[in-house]
Image (cartoon, rainbow, N blue to C red; front, top):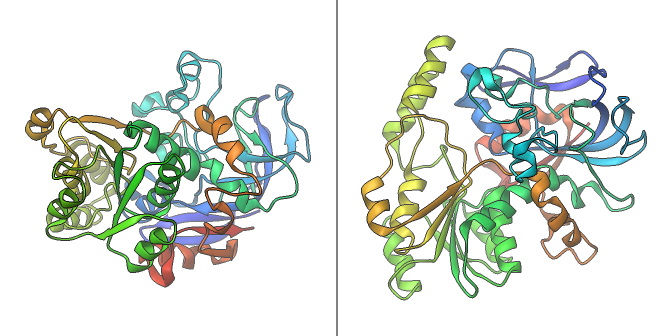
Amino acid sequence: MKALTWQGRRKIEYADVPDPRIQEPTDAIVRVTSTGICGSDLHLYEVLTPFLDAGDVLGHEAMGIVEETGTAVPGLKPGDRVVVPFNIACGSCFMCVQGLQTQCETTQVRDQGMGAALFGYTKLYGQVPGGQAEYVRVPQAQYGPIKVSEGPPDDRFVYLSDVLPTAWQAVEYAGIPDGGTVVVLGLGPIGDMACRIALHRGHRVLGVDLVPERLQRARGCGVETLEYGDGLTDRIRDLTDGRGPDSVIDAVGMEAHGSPVARLGQQAAGLLPAAVQRAFVQKAGVDRLAALQASVEIVRRGGTISLVGVYGGAADPLPLLTMFDKQVQLRMGQANVRRWSDQILPLLTDDDPLQVDSFATHRLPLPDGPAAYEMFQHKRDGAVKVLLQP
């Protein structure tokens, strides 16, 4: 079959790879009909390259049609239409029962000290072949895949794989009080969707970004927008009775602008041998913390920061004195997809309150994936969300 494979830093190839097959009784094989490029895929494109091997199949936002199931997958049959959550969880262990599917004890990648395995996301998370492919093997299929109805286009459901539950959890973790205000830093796919969910719940939403097309897109949904730059904290305080918002969602992560030294560190790390790179990224940290630092400055005293943007370093300095003094609450983590999917599904109706049908900015055939990665990385042509069709 054909798939998008990682071949090196900033080098994605559409290539032949082995067809997936049933390996365990709890496996299923899904023929992919739509798959997304996630903002966190860009970390693999450039920053987290030492944790990949040439030929790794990328992608963790897939949906499609069940082709085959193992003997221990009673809830699925060939022909079922399903969305594949990006995290792989069993549904029955201690962590899954707590609603922490990202910490699943059955699929934890213990040799790396990490949580549940993820599709298409490096050795740190199990090196499981991803969904930017014609077919994907789905482990733990007795629990993971979300069955969806026939009829509506893939756009209605594909974001259940990652974007919707990640944004939903970001808003949940933000703890926004009734009638409260939330600032969303970063209006890429997750930040944009978090804005829509917060608006749907009746909150006041201020969205911050640097890209004009993203600011305009958010304004079209009813978000009050501000351009990132000098004086941002004061501008936000002027809009929030002088004290700042109740909550801040950091939907940027390690790709934040505004940290040239850290950016230089990322570029320098990319020149090191792979083994040295891995140690450097894990132990020293190469994150650009501008968005997290801004979140701490912006949030009101006693407020909450919901960190949904991905950070990768183990020794990044946090402004703990300020966080302690302001009594800031901080919540974070990979989205527990199945914890939220049943709450989200009722919103994916013909009324489309979250406007998922028009959420994608680009729809391209899978062979165009390498060019799509480059476009998304450079934020060209108004790219916010790219969907690929095999």
